[in-house]
Image 1 (spheres, rainbow, N blue to C red):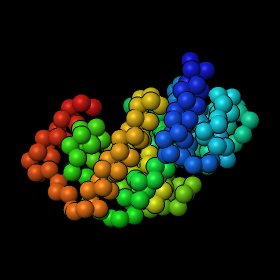
Image 2: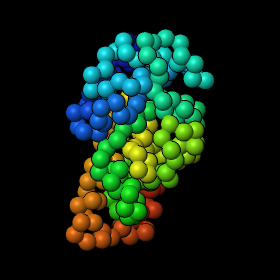
Image 3: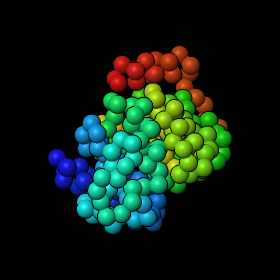
Length: 209
């Protein structure tokens, strides 16, 4: 099981890099190994060239248990968020460029694209906090207490899943929605779906959880 999870993280880190969602040493990914341990990407390593043995194992307090390098500097974000969401097992923190750009515009993102509501519930922007800070970790854990993905103002995205693949898929969803909304705002101001329809879509999202 551990080897399969290591391979899974590495494979999806390569996907993130190939899609342009990460550059150089950016981003980090984690997955629960069991009830007491977590596999995380190492600090200061290019995610497009990771190997399974590069991953670091930590306990749920963040203590390093094994691995050649040090765990990601955003470890607190992963630990706090997974503690808040015991129903989830994986965290993907990426830097998709259009999602970051949209977070700088203060434009409305939520309630415009129905498939986003059905898959994410709410497309939200977490207020800015300094990268690597505990404040950022607290902001993210709070924002994802009920939803499974968010854009971090000026920084990137965080997505949760029962698997790394699921969290990666939501990362793609957020960036695709951001690309559509960026294009729409470039020519006009997109109208949200009617309030009644938005409530119905949210109910469908809740029922699918």
